[in-house]
Image (tube, rainbow, N blue to C red; front, top):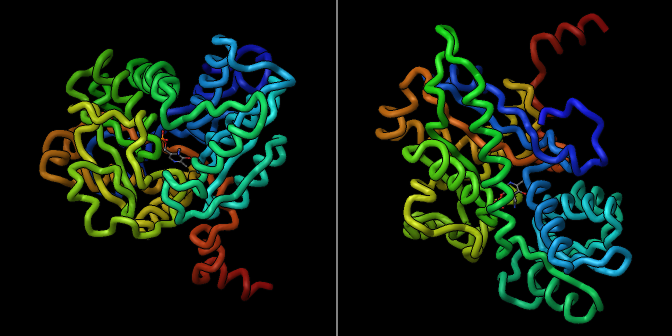
Length: 360
Ligand code: PMP
């Protein structure tokens, strides 16, 4: 990163994503800090999960667990880890089966199939530990298929490690290498980091990189959709526990092992609604030109909500030069047919549209 030389294959184009100012949104919200987006759809497979897919495959290869032409990689996923795995396995010559809850988009299924993966849909409402869930079905298949392996993003240490070794350091590098100027003041460090949690690998790994190796005082905020149970304290989850939500890739009905519960890894949790998340995703697209997906909207909502708390506003939101980084996990490619996105095609006609109509 950046890619200035010929790459051996698409795996070299994973990660190395840009950190981009969200100036228009910051201004609209009255923020004085630098609001920055780590924009992950620029990665080869289109999401932050490419990073863990690549690392899980390469580490399994190093340990001798994968045999080209023989191994069958099976993974339960909300889609993006599957796309990253299918991409890596297409290049390396492993078969792939992805178990995917029904609510996940057709675009993800199409991308997976284009990369040569088999896709098995599972009922969205199946409890994680039931045999019908995406996790249960993956386990059933693994037992029955010779040379099948589940790399298991929910437990694999290479999930948070991929973020500790790549996502976190990239954010630090971008901030440290951007000079502070009178018109663009910068504290020179990452002051706040916000990410939504699915497996929790991103928020756990980036938090470790930031707090252990860069700025121990960095504040880490995680977003969790209403209906999920990841947030702490658990009282935050009570009201809407079990309620269905549409946003993809974040929230669960169990706590994945890779989501660290060590005190201080995540400092604050914010619950987000579908409605706010999708409005924020549309705003990122329209105002900042960033073609993000729904969970990026959730992350932005969590960021703005926390920056407007007393602590968030006093220490960061109102502070010139404070660097607040929001992780934007994937892009609109995954959701082009979803109602929340198609809504944009049905917006009330603008004055310019009226003018065009009058001319034609
Ligand atoms: N957003 C999207 C679109 C995702 O696919 C994922 C991964 N499930 C996340 C956010 C959350 O990332 P993590 O699993 O690292 O918590």
